[in-house]
Image (cartoon, rainbow, N blue to C red; front, side, top):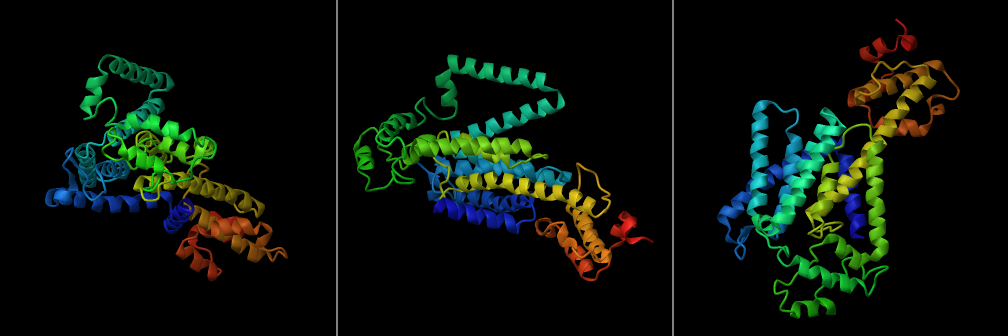
Length: 391
């Protein structure tokens, strides 16, 4: 029910925004407020620092949550710098640097590794697009070789550089316990969010061990937590969902920035439990990034119907095939309405199909809608459609 509720909220958010890009801009404005308030809390509120590490947690419940939110903030702010004038780019760079400082101050190795992974993948795609696939593969081989060589020679020092030991602050000691617990219910699990509860006998026994004095409230390995809670069936469905996401991503004919959140959160889930957790901001962003792809696919499918519907009425479309905006579609759509009225067809515009009309009516601007009510085409439409309106 929590997942269904979060999905409904996210869909309502996308319906309120004009595009998925506008939704990302709204999130950016919220994070621009959150970042300065976090620094203010760290400076003025003693409880905003976890002194046992010590590490910052700011306005978040713990340092790991602050690291995850800061990671999302860095990715959002990096996108927000595109196409801005120089002065605004400098301001955005300041916010981006602040988000990275929060990741470092929170001592969140997970957030830092996720951010570095996204940066490396972005560089790889940039090289692949500009220099060709061969150079991109060479770059990937070099990075992989350095990673393997560094891990083989100086594993302890590399992990220590992130402020951790080889057990990831005791996380790896917890993972065998979860695997043993999952063996009691391997098919359907113990129930979503049904393991880490205070009155669970398994958790009570776990807290009694001297090995876990920090009393964990999650497995710090999201996929193991899901295996324990929803079993092999649920994990298989998750794998199919991820595969279908990337398959549908290939169908989209334009770049989708939301995919970086999807990929980054999958990386974060390797050492944190974030997927489908409604109390976690990163969990919400995962649902949003997943649905953003389907919003764009629906929009792409709706726009693809305009040329076919216009051709059925003999309405020429004066726009490029690959690049077109909503106003071009709105003008063409309005022209089709007027062509229907002037043709006095007994079938009317509805012969094109009510579904096409419904999917395209949202693309009309307020000005186009008003002109449609007055039964008068704009000068732009008149110039584009001489065959329909004449001189």
